[in-house]
Length: 161
Image (tube, rainbow, N blue to C red; front, top):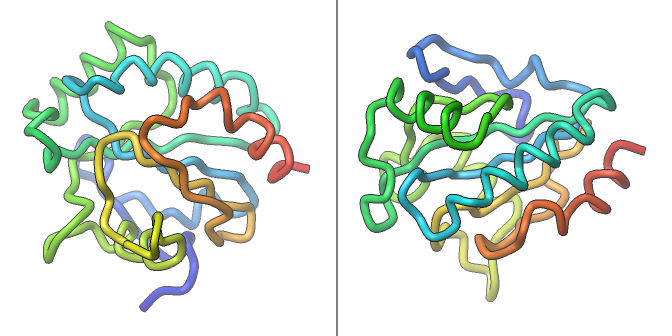
């Protein structure tokens, strides 16, 4: 099992491989996103957080997921269009993934093992679960879906320092 975020490769929305090694030395917030969720308006806060800190070496990686209430039914190109038109998203939104179960994206298996949720459960409970990854590729903290993105600005600031 990989022991570092930077050791994984994921799929971009166009299906091309993206090595997470390219984020070495940056702070990354990983979020499983959905277009038809009660938390979808968090895209606005995520974009604000991204714009506030991106010049300091911060990025957000959105991973669309349809495992929770089928709230991300669109194709990768439909998801990209939705994010751009509705929330002016400029951070990378990757290809659609599964975050739980046998077909879970390997980076998500690692994130969940590195930062279990309440009572040590690894399973992701809903859309917009967030993982803050440090410059060294290790998970700093896991945040519940209801945690507003701007509420974690202090943690991002600390991680960038």
